[in-house]
Image (tube, rainbow, N blue to C red; front, side, top):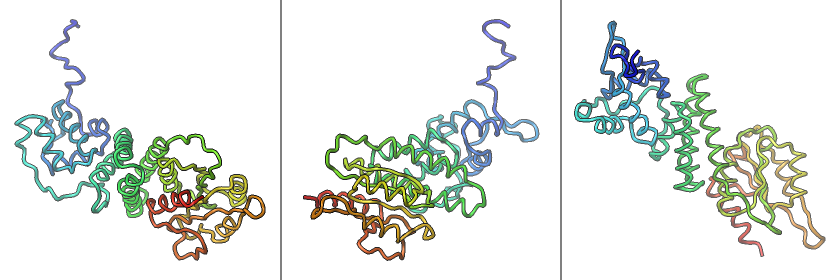
Length: 323
């Protein structure tokens, strides 16, 4: 074949794609492409015999632009219009129908930030690079507390509700999103500097509890304030937690319980009663009961913050109150 190629054999980039191939390339479901075609008139330029769709490079570029916009939180109808404008006059004048319709697989988010909607769309598409980028942008722009309360947590809850109402569907979405939320929180947790004679804050899930993301968010938020922490993570055995408290002499112990079945008032009381130091100047930790599992549990002397912001304020206040 001549070096210049043969007009009878177009390059791979010029070969129209099937809907399935394009869906794999974009990281969306084939039903999403059909929905966008029906609702926003973004369809293939070529239809082969039997009404099979074939997507040209121009179609692909248009849809790639739409995916980038929806991943940044732009509503699909607006993203379709913007993508058409960028593609040129012919695409721009395509009508957009049924603006209020909800695409299949959309998460029940309610009234949330635009960044939250973009994160949800990227998560449903399993678009890991977009999820990672948006989480990093949220933490960088708003800080950990706002990013958690107004972007991360609402999206995680929406995925959980969708999973609960759809059988085993969307499990992969929750796992991918949880992994990247954890990664973003750890990546944006400042490394502690030299801390001399400063008691740390211990963070741990109670025995039997695996839900670490909320205390990972707290760990990151405390790190932004320069407060020392010791993260022990999921399902810490009671004996190990007791040993850690005795060794560290922490200013506070945060116990996360997601469910009432794992919340342990006896463990909380036991940790609150641990004392250390010389006679006449003995100290004991403040105990912070965090998570919905502690709801309705008597909390003698323990702090019960309702939100991440409340927990950060309460723990920072412990250091401000120290002589």
